[in-house]
Length: 180
Image (cartoon, rainbow, N blue to C red; front, side, top):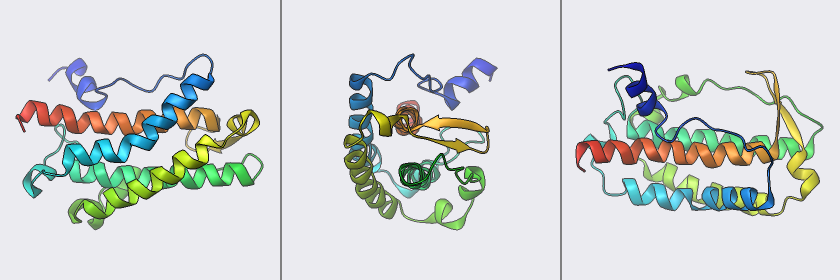
């Protein structure tokens, strides 16, 4: 497998690209994507067998089960980061090792239904909160210690809409390749 094929498997929708400006239309569209993510995910995975859920989306990649649990882990972190950013002055957020979390027993073997339910409630709350943001709140920011970079809430919204779509594409592309 050459590098371009591997890159396409890793990033089936491409890497996140921030827009030049965060328009109201862009933010509204991304919040809609965030709100609809749990239902779109459930539609793709609800009827998969354990064997299918335990299939990696690429060689040396996570299984579908791990991807689903990772989304719930990651999006919980998003929610907490939003709350910190809204209630503190440019907080430094806590970095976590998502690759290590993905190797924990719950991510490896737990049924997917609890994470699907968690994502449903969590994304309702995320979208509800995000829809309330005014211009000043969208500009509030936190510092991500992994990159030592200041990230505004408006960028976080775009990133997490992309993140859900990115992992959903891992699943849909695998299903296409396998003929499921």
